Image (cartoon, rainbow, N blue to C red; front, side, top):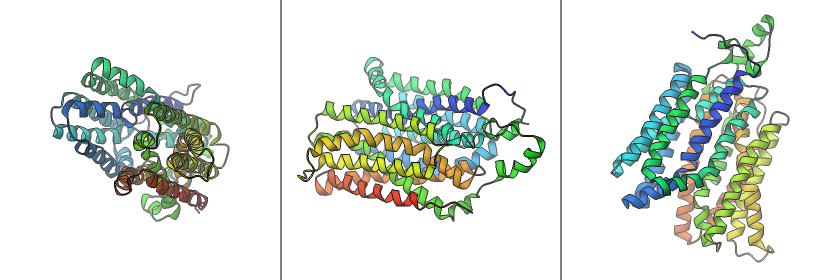
Length: 419
């Protein structure tokens, strides 16, 4: 039976955002962005082929895409506390198992359980809950939440140092314990709809008449999943977001391709690191302006910036003589716009989903969008790798990704208000 939350000076929704943001940072730091050092250490220890271990990454992304659409339904049935606790317990256990594994099949099993845990214990559940607790400040709240994920990239050097000092097994074991220490208390903070606890989105105060008049618009308004899937706006947004995810996922090859384009390893790593700061900056800046300006217009700008960023990668590898100092121009475009464009787009596209389709099934909407993103994210490395194999050069893959990214701009512009 829901109970009323005492009304403090700080709206309870912000406590959810801040606590979830910490877990989001941690999951990004140790897995979404911080797992490559572990991956390399595991390869070195067991001598497995890159193809065999790379298959685990494909399993993770495919499984995540299959699970995501159902997360919102599970949250509605069991509540966010139970669902997150279940996910965090599995996530921690999978890392601990990974720290003790001795065979490839154990690695596959651990990754499978890890994906199940992360799907129910992070990201989608946070977005579903935060999307319910905010309306007027939803963009700002999601930007703060997703800034935590952006910060994950800058902690990678600490993971590398930890692996060198303590070994990858001890570090991965500690990562699993860390998920329990941070995630389980956070699961106790999560709440479902604010109305169930005597509050309203954004901490608004309403009298009884306003509560009655606004109940439908507040909690029960929005599209059903079937209605959304029949709506052109949903697929335009899903396709645009999926393409941007494909472009961003190409960062798996940035270091290798930059070296092939003639940059030193140290310089390539430096400009990639600088682009991560742009990612963080984009998420933070959007948080200040997203609730003040038209989000469709802002997302158009974000995707335009990301287009310039991936164009920069194409220019770095191009041998064209038509662009003066083309390599330097490409480096500048990549550093300034790649991370900035993607980072700013993340909270915007997630918030637009709520703007267009309402609170009612927001968790399920985000889950389906995540599935589309997972499909594109899985195909992107395949595209880059096969293009390199067939042409002998990474540059053609980046040309394709640049043209794909250009296509997202008219897609976003064509979004129309739902009746």
